[in-house]
Image (cartoon, rainbow over all chains, first blue to last red; front, side, top):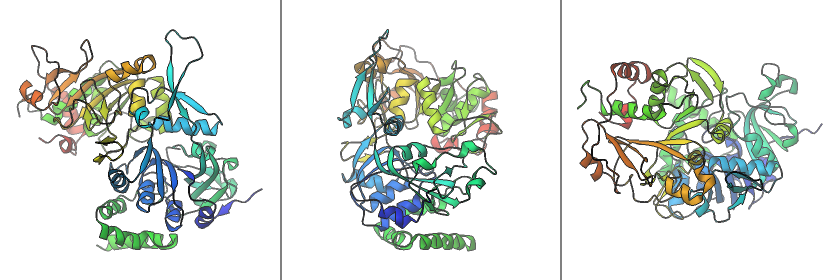
Length: 291
Length: 254
């Protein structure tokens, strides 16, 4: 059986500039941050990013990696607005395709099912149709008492998907142990190539030893690469392994407000290798305990 | 304080928001924000016992529990993807916030100013377009002012009556805006052309004050009643059970 174990660096080496990349999780929850950080260290650029957005979007935008953002929101959850993406929009520096959250799901599902579009009521009457003139409507071909004309959400084909789960085996079967699968399976199925990072790679038999089989959200046929990334979703949450690092997230937001503070944040946390990032996070936590 | 029983403005707002769910029965009450969250739990603890209420993540909780704490009993699982299924099925009544709302109930949570280069980028349309054309929607506007109650919104996120009508049958079919609660008053759209109507003013607020704080012409009936005051039982539930940490005053001071 194909062993798909990779490093973050290997994953980034399979990506190229101009690609459309989907990022799993939801807001500041179970986001594949170690893969995002690896993209920050690369020379990839001109990316179209599809995401239920959180700090992944902020970091990629701040590093000038994003040409277009396809999204329904960008939020840090406990902090409503994400500062970098906000600043980029207000500077007119970020192109967006803004969809309703359910439309985004529909587009991913259409791509996963190899359909050109899926119909939905969501978007009708809203300015989502005005700011996305490529969107079309479709009439029901069946006789109705009242005729239905619905939004045809175009398939959102991804060149690559990046998701983070709690556990995986080295063939790509991956498991979520928190309460919400989010849309990670759809991201993987909508993508040409899907890469799963996880807290721990375990033997396949261990996946269902202590958890019900329904937790196996990602099946190996969806997956091209598996990365073991302990604390890899930091500073987003990865329940039940760890919650969101709220204190770190506040530091991220504070730093984003001031160029000098952001330069320091970058030097300490972003212009470094992943193991150095994790060491800096651990050191920061130790400092906080001492204070 | 201008209520007879010492209820604060925040508590009057909570009861006014709770009233939005009256008569809904077995649907998911989805509150966005602190005041609506307290309100949904209050509605279920008193006059609307069959409501379903989530913990804000993926669990449906039973009982009446404090804001910011986990529910005492879990009765169901409702991850984000199932919320989409449920909203398409119509078994939900959401109370959202908005930075802008117009006379027909169009709302904006996406961007203020020119869409290509907004003066203020907000969170994004989120689920507002889909929510508003699939099931009942109410709004909680915490700061009633001419800049939030505007003649037209900059980016229609939640769909109002005029826009739903213009989009035709599929947008109207399940569209229903129930009520708007602000820190000053309660509104609905029960007028012939679905323009926003003043339903009641909160104790201590005058109609003139509401008019001066609204950036468009409201439909104002000859006699405008006062928003009802919380009952002693409601006040006890709010203060002792649902919001013992007084988080409500962060949204509505005093």
